[in-house]
Length: 477
Ligand code: SF4
Image (tube, rainbow, N blue to C red; front, side, top):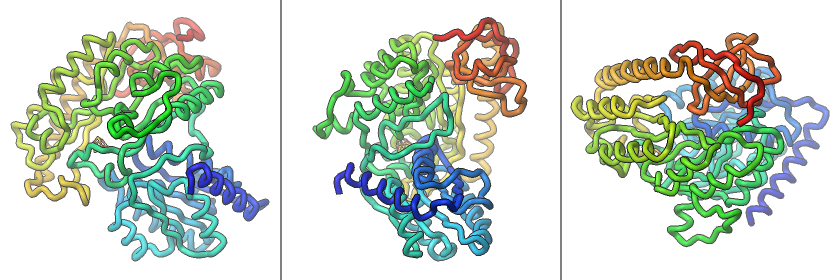
């Protein structure tokens, strides 16, 4: 079926379910694990559920439909899912709720086998490549009262035109590409999300213009390998329509930068090897592109990086940092680091600490290596003992926290432009926002500042946030 025809088909099923549950006040809840891409997928699932007539609730006990959007990247995700399913068994027996599980984990056969064997009350299992068919799967589960398994093992397609229910009305995530061709040896993503494919420039720009019209101020461009946008299409001579000059990641940033109303552009997650000169230049020239750039390091040791299949050396990474710092004024960097990859020695780990010392990251997302079934890393025999991994992790954490503390002090006394996001979670009397460098700032201000970029004077620093004071109102960038 053609893609547009497929979406029409799904809209037909949405209408059928709406009719089926009319006047029943049915509710759904959704539980999301994992990254921002998964959160964006959950917004699409929520959009479809609302179109079908379900109302969202945060309480699983009051739900008629419970959706799990799973992730298989982080450790403990499986335990979390199975724990939740155990809790739901009673609800299923009492209220006959519909349970649907989707996402990355469902692309792993050993997981779906376990669900079918140990949790046979689950109604729908769907994968990453069949999310758009959720209405049809749900309709069949409801009308035919049978278990549905809808998983495809393919490279993946992109479907446009699904309804979406966004979680936030100031900041929005926009997926620009999906899948990954890099096959880092610790990562399961290429196996569960398929090969790289990019959305059409027009579809992305139309979505962002629509967000701007609705009052959104910040967009985060998402992709498993976001800065290789349209690279595969060009390499493989796959035809795509250029739109408003967009034919690469750099030109996409330039085009989004021109959209009135959008004030901030962020993107995750890039790969260092795809920070080509045109991308660096676009970041430096586009005033709306935030100057906090995520540059995943993973390890600071060249041998470990080779084993990880990261395609850069320690020196190349440091040279790239140097080049970016020279070309992008006010650049700050965040990173991801994996501690205890198979074969990593104490000496090799010291290289990671050395890079952290040298670069002085604004934020570091630290992970203890955990095995993923089906990846080359899982088959490596020289796994690092857990105890050693934890010792190294604590050492890295201490260094990072010291650096963050030092770095935070630099903010005190400065004036920062802050996008005001809402009330502070811990104190509703205060407001919270973020700087260009993604630092949380808490301050006292009127609620009508929410959604604006204002200038704040930073008056004190704390480990995970800064305190600010208003110096003028409604300052727009
Ligand atoms: S670039 Fe590497 S870490 Fe990132 S999604 Fe692809 S395989 Fe995984």
